Length: 333
Image 1 (tube, rainbow, N blue to C red):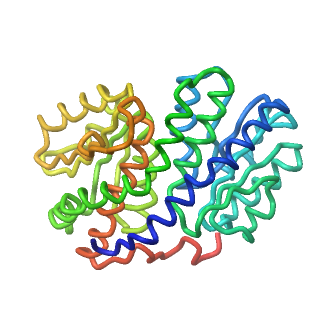
Image 2 (cartoon, rainbow, N blue to C red):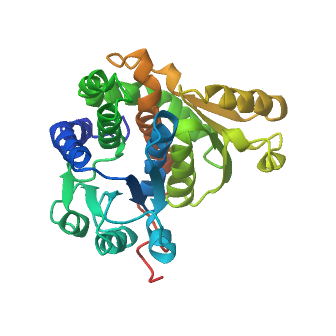
């Protein structure tokens, strides 16, 4: 597969699920000590990565869990943030400035802090109370967050199946390699068909809304300098749909949670008015070893793997490196 280092991918993914004992010990200690709320604090893609787990908590529990933007938290504050709070800070490099500053802001208020990163000597790992360290550049953070939130919900009596889910996640590295292999020809075809497309309309919902936002902003815009519109499937019929024309590239991310019908409704409408509709559906992938009841929970990981192949093929056909930036970490701002 184009620019797919399978051994590295397996090492990175295995390192995330291998954190299970540390995550469970941490969650158990936090629950036993007691805390009142949980903040999932990120910036850009890592902020979007936290949305599925706010969503999971919101539909499963009355426990307050909130995904927040690091810079906004510092600027605006939060009345519920304090000594009875726990905050989780993901950063691939461990150097994201807004995240590092948010850690300091939270610690000054007595918040217990947890970092997710691939670098044990990074600012994020050094500044938090507990650092959960995976292999360098391991992405995404979904496995760690599924383990963290699943254990928390189990301890609260709100997730009876957590143990089985955690056991099944151990097979995730190999499962996702198979996903990548299956997705690669689809990804190549999409890239070839859209190498000259300069605008994409992206739609997703439920626990895939965060990925929709992330892929639109962090990949197509930041890494490929393409114009996009991103719309939640539940909000599709309230405004932005007026931008869709017959030749608009409409890209739909479809998962397997309870919001699937909302995205089906979008697809049905889009195909009536547009000739360029692409649906990336996690249901197309067998995911041997993952129980049907857990498929919806791992959908963000599946979609990240599928669209990772799209990204590599877009890079090829557009001759535009995914590492190229004009402004991000290039200019002072």
